[in-house]
Image (cartoon, rainbow, N blue to C red; front, side, top):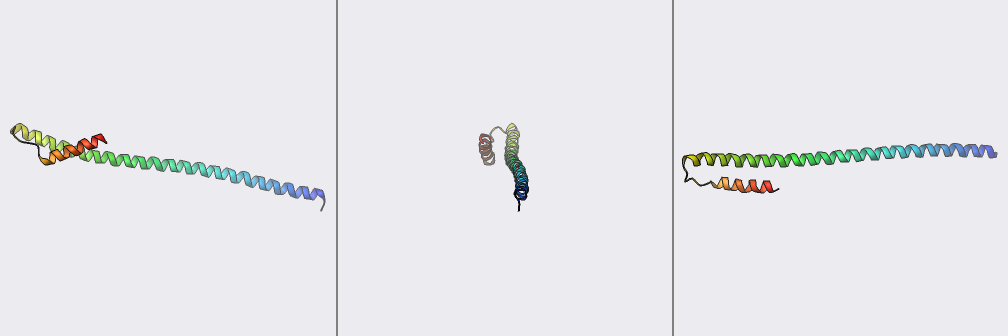
Length: 101
């Protein structure tokens, strides 16, 4: 083997390794970027799901409290001696706690 053949083989092997390394780096960085985007979307979806559950829970509590409260106020107009029911007082306590959170 002459020195030209050795240099030729070394250049071919070196260029092949360089091309493979660059492609591997580009693929790895692209995959990493896509995984970060995917993780961000998953976190946002989980946060939206959590917020939606909290809003639904608060809405149920508020509607129950407002329903019991309006019924009591309606009955209070007819008879001013009526005291609030235990359901109304419990609902009011839960509503107050839900507002604080």
